Amino acid sequence: MTIFRQVLQTKPKNGKFKLEKPRLLKTIPCLTYGIYVIILIMKVKFHFLISIFLLSLFSCKPAISGNGNGGETVLKRSEQYFSALSWTESETILKEPLPEPFQVKDLKTDTLYKYGDTDLTESIFPSLEGLGVLDYSGIDPSLIYFFNSLTIQIKQKQIKEGICVKEKVFLPFMINYKLKLLKEISSIFYSRPEYNAEGIMIAKFRCNIKGEKKFYTMLEIGAVFFNEKWQLDSFDIIGDTDAGSIE
Image (cartoon, rainbow, N blue to C red; front, side, top):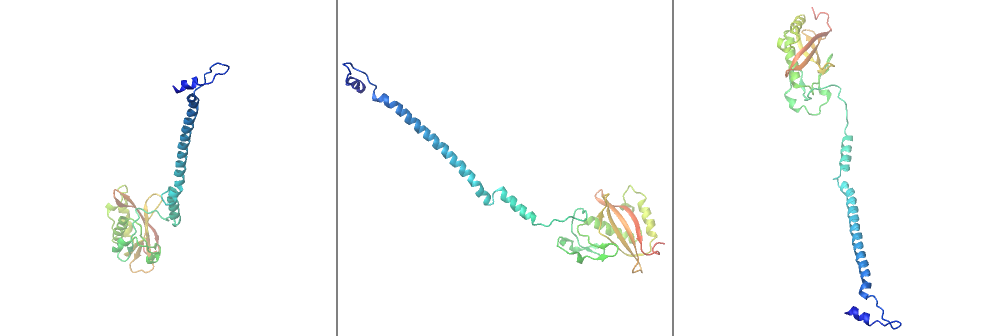
């Protein structure tokens, strides 16, 4: 009714009535534009909030790394730790390194082998001409036991057939023949065993002749680990400092 009243109350021009648009119709485009502006502002705020969230998320990463939880800090600490270590190359190839001091007097392993991981200097190990320093640390205990039993058999000039490799049937007979040619042996010492190019553990044996202080006979013996035990693979007389030690 208000609209029609507005139309009827409009003054005529030239004696005729003229219809005018109602004010409500004029305000509709303004309302539409206002709603559009509000929606646009809301969208802008939404994108603005997302941008702020992403920016704050990326800005937190350096703080996490600085607290020690980031991968970069762990890598730096690891690099500093390993760079501070002194790295050296081993001069010999060792099998199952188990440090073990050795008692030369009785040719038996010392009961203190349990403390073999103690940092010991070479000065405590004895040295013999022809053998060098008698340091058996890091050598397989089973090999030490095998060589210890072998020294007893050499001193008795009788090698058991069971300790030789089965493929070399002649080996125990040849060794026993050579041992019988030697003079009586008072004591036997052997060098630090080392692997050769063929994977055989080689050691030099010094046989001191009874009644002699300067003369001795040198042997070179090779052993291999087969079927869960050490076996004798080679036996050679490599040097005799006394011409009368072998008849």
